[in-house]
Amino acid sequence: MTDISTRAREILERLGAGNPFDEDGELVARSPIDGGVIGRLRAHTPQEAAAAIGRAQEAFELWRAVPAPVRGRLVRELGELLREHKHDLGALVTIEAGKIVSEGLGEVQEMIDICDLAVGLSRQLHGLTIATERPGHRMMEQWHPLGVVGVISAFNFPVAVWSWNSALAFVCGDAVVWKPSEKTLLTALACQALIEEAARRAGAPDGLSQVLLGDRAIGEALVDDPRIPLVSATGSTRMGKEVAPRVAARLGRTLLELGGNNAAIVAPSADLDLTVRGIVFSAVGTAGQRCTSLRRIIVHESIRADLVSRLKAAYETLPIGSPLETSTLVGPLIDEAAADAFLRAIKRAQADGGTLVTGGTRADGVAGGQYVRPAIVDMPEQTEIVRDETFAPILYVLGYRDLDEAVGLHNAVTQGLSSSIFTLNVREAETFMSAAGSDCGIANVNIGPSGAEIGGAFGGEKDTGGGRESGSDAWRSYMRRATNTINYSTELPLAQGVEFS
Ligand code: UN1
Image 1 (cartoon, rainbow, N blue to C red):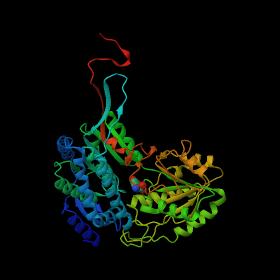
Image 2: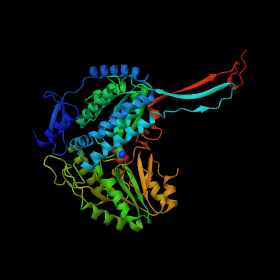
Image 3: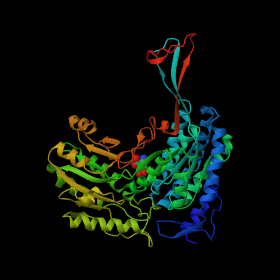
Image 4: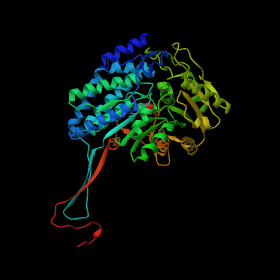
């Protein structure tokens, strides 16, 4: 057994997940750090999935009767456990997803943050009172628990995305059945162990949170089950385009977070030191494997050469290697397919006339892992490969002459998750954030497109799915709205002036 495998097993033990391994299991838990096997796990069958949904449904019926502020206790306990185990869970994220130590810890912090938000929210699930046209009447809205929420999540945020959905779903009175990525099974089991402990402490019903390990068949079990009114799915646009019509065919709801191909406009007035730091974090953080990763720079021609040379210099000092080393800034890609896609995309960009400024090759790292040098490719125009999302650290550079052209290039892709502009010019900043500017769900000024905090609603437009998770009023997706009209008079006036006597 490798050191990494031993370490993962020790962490699972400490987090209360025991020894979940089964030598005959169909699923393989690996670490992208060295590509090594940590252990095998058994997949759930579709029959087991159906039974789990049934148990979640029963738990939901008990849970929805618990007052929301009391439900908040479950999430408070989860937040406490996450604080206590932040170091271990963060390390497991590093081992299983390949994130550097700081980003593994950051992901757990994001979970703690959403728990804090959800606990407060448990006392703030509010509806409106609306003026009625009828005397002696009152009209109002109530938000009720929705049911069992199906969560399908991706490898790149293996624990935070579950928590964004679950923390809100639990305070909203729902149950959650989760299908994590097949690439991040252990972090999912760790979260499940923590939420089960939180449920014991809070006296929440058994079965409120379930995790189902498996492939497509398990995803389909969630997508097609009429007992699941909401499927929240994070992953590729291709996956979302399969999930959405199937859930819609049974008139279920979806909340989709699909891919991204995010850009930053760099205007002539930009503070270039700050801009370079913002760009490098967003383009290279998580080895370019965030939905929010920066993949396109649209820079004013007057500063293009200067920006590119500063970025090249910064890229060439990036420490690449094992994400367990605290000095590393670029860890491995998740698997060989990701590295192949990276190398293929660079070849295509070069064939389109792009100039490889730096990187774009395999890098030394830990034997068995897929390490690459983050790439900058200066492009003559926004060709198809630039408009495609390659989930890897490639940064395409495009030039512009006026802001209209920049916004045009910015919006000329099918994706619409996150975006940013670097400028000290208030007209440009406000134009970029206006309705005529960025068409994304997130539009930032003087920070990159990644690294959103949980207080805002998170999600995108167009091919990125239209869903909104985490902060603001995203909680409403996890509840159903009832409009109530109450007559406290002795008359029965009808709306719209209808007479019926
Ligand atoms: C994702 O990549 O799926 O804004 C989520 C960010 C993180 C979340 C990214 N807070 O980069």
